[in-house]
Length: 335
Ligand SMILES: [Zn+2]
View 1 (cartoon, rainbow, N blue to C red):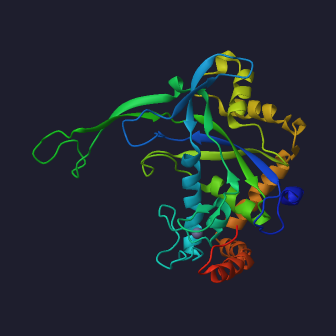
View 2 (tube, protein in one colour; view 1 turned 30 degrees about the vertical axis):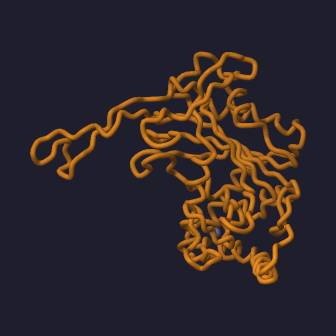
View 3 (cartoon, rainbow, N blue to C red; view 1 turned 90 degrees about the horizontal axis):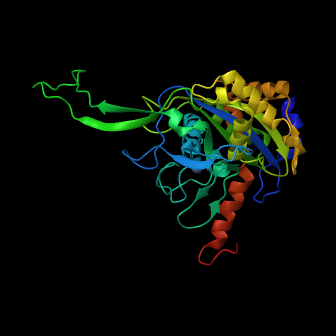
């Protein structure tokens, strides 16, 4: 089993203190429909950043950016859908509401809180053990952005209301074209085997990102490489720059041939085990095995058993928390 090969870089059980066990994943994210990643609200330009084109090619280009938040929020929501179904989200410490992402009252007890962390209003915080960074497009943003005016549609299904008045344009909107590739490095710190399954499942099963996601924002995630070690992998920016250098000039245009891109990416990451702190890479077969294992654990028949087991793995920590809260009443807790 390939997950056993990762054992040296996984925790046997959840602990409060970091021990440097690091697993890094190379994720290829491909838009399957128009997608919108804006900083805030409408009318803002698409998220992009001026960066060096390659490592050897020192030209400056603008690349599209998929920010950390745009990646993690939908992926956490995906996992939380399952937790909700199996009633594994808890009441917040004051007992007012069920753990929710968008309120200031995390339950501090559920799988999502333990794994992705929380900042509680009053006491304590939990650092996330899933580290992400901004993902960059391989090609320059100028190739990847389309533009159109979106009109409001009336209930009659037309652009005119009952009196025949034309609808006003909602906005003139930029969008990211389908078939755009982002490359991304995700780091898992001191995860248990089941936590790794859960976190990878969230990445593999999330299909909508960005704004207005019931209509646009379809995206497919593929894991192209998985590494174990004591340090983080090179950054996603370094990765796209390395790929840029290896793609021949005539290939650098939208739409990129997906197979060619995967081959170049594999070539770029294949020597990463020579880098400091990176011990091993799963082979293609081992990676396929691991993904099959994740799919199996999240399948409808297995999901309940799997999530219940993962949930129970925090039971002793919950007791410690409850105890220290009792003791801490009336006096300040030592950190
Ligand atoms: Zn929670």
